[in-house]
Image (tube, rainbow, N blue to C red; front, side, top):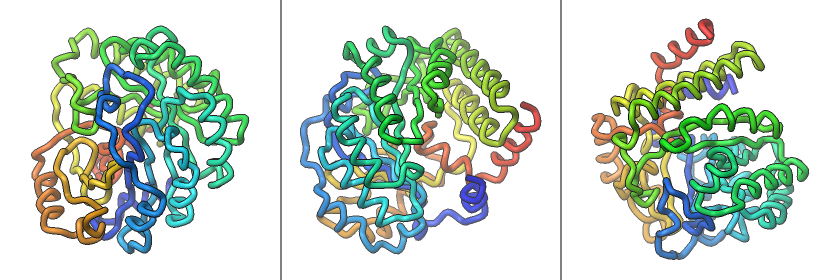
Length: 351
């Protein structure tokens, strides 16, 4: 919202005020996605509710949390997912909860979804459903027949259960670069919001799939760019001009530009205002940079977060020695740049 956006812009990023945590609650996954190798990771232990509480509870530097991003693997494979959501909702009353899911299991969506909407008020929980194209394209990319139909059925179940915040999120690779307008219209037909399109990127988190900017030809990028412009035009017709549309348009257009030049255009505060924790309690600055800060089972989270190692990683990031473009990392830092916010605001006038 507006108050949150202004607060992010005016406040100085500090490790004493973490605003976002991304938590992979499991590496398990039922799908075999072409753009991700998480499903190939060896089975590991997963943090219990008691361990999660010991790690996160009573932390002054987490009192400003605005978002807990629950991801995986596939979070719905955790039978205690609703308990995890309930804990974070109670412990961090200012924070929204984002659950990123492939929505493949209709049965788990219905069973756990019912518990989740009871565990936390629906306006605080967003379900981000991965949709990567039409049925044939989506199923091919996700590596499982029926994954498209199951995802749509799961969307309808969540709506029936009372979920009010459901979005579609798309991972772009060359083979689905022409699918964006279809996905946007599908979201509108299903009564949910098309949240974002992100280009697939390699990192330790995704299991280092063999993806790079060289996979994208100029023609592929032009198809993706055309799809983005068509979505922007259609949203403008449906919604009118707004700062949210200007922000989303700016972010998606910059994503295309990043694929071309790999240049970071604003300061990144990952590792300062946010961090990533994996299923074994390993702490990283983000999902893209493989610099381990420590393990929150063997050491105290606060000691890790304020350690010399963490400070060194922050200096590395501040020095511009890494670059990525994901909605998880780049989007939040973009909102803290006065220059970029001014460009977005001016962009709203030009829509």
